[in-house]
Length: 386
Image (cartoon, rainbow, N blue to C red; front, side, top):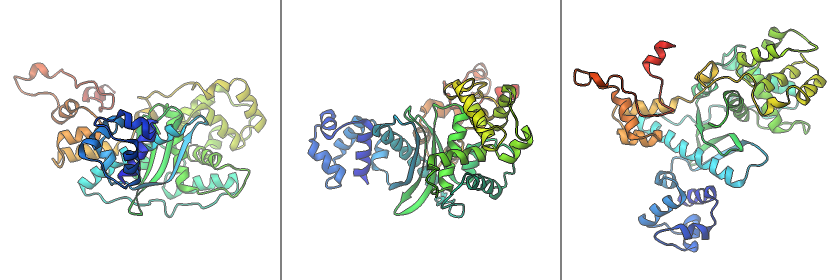
């Protein structure tokens, strides 16, 4: 297990065995590092600490055994994604899953296992079957045809561990099953914190599709295209869209597209594609739109949804943070351990534990604010103003 983690961390750093050996203090040979990775030898404690520093990873990452392997790992990535980018994303995922499973273990929460055993669709051969699979999942989850307010909350409710992390530039998301001793211990989805709200929601739905659809039985439908079709159908149900815009149209105005994207929480480009998929606009009209006025929509989102408005205010993973704060509140872990799990400073965590100083002596401090922390929850004052 240690050897696998060490190899992954080295690939993430883009280092050869010799390059890593040159960074080490105390010095070790490339041959020794090769033996560590092959499981033929274990490093001393001093060398272990040096490996962590040289590779910029925690000792928890190198030594933990919460996750043995990642099964069914799939990336949503650009064509320019390198092997180092994939290794870095995989390392980010493992690090987050280790912390997630650790806090569940502290709280006595059993592994979720495979929550999609009864939802799998082994093969789809047509686009209609893909749309049907999306509608059937909505029905199974009792979602109706209404827009999903938060994909993060929905997936967390269904047992998926959702992580938002700083992924490499060319990777917007990935999904997998975490394994331990040959058993599934978690379904996981990771989405890049670099993406806007619209793309984030579509990426989450795309990664959800990978957990539902195993393959396509039609060589004319690529698997990734099928995942995109499922994501669009899940986020923008065809029947509901048709009710809002009517039947076949010669054109749909920019005003309508902007309204629809804010209604469903997806990009303007995704709305345009979906209008073609459900038959509102002809395929030729969609092609013409992306060749003319909608060309820029692929790189610059029109009428963007703000991070603190509408869907943007809710599309954030919450469960892991809630579990850590529960463990801190129940004194099952120390504030220092809580800060390490959350990736925040001890000063921020201690402020969140105690809040503003009360009483006569502390009255002058009541207006103080917590240390800067972009992930801290909104203050009570802000909620009242809202």
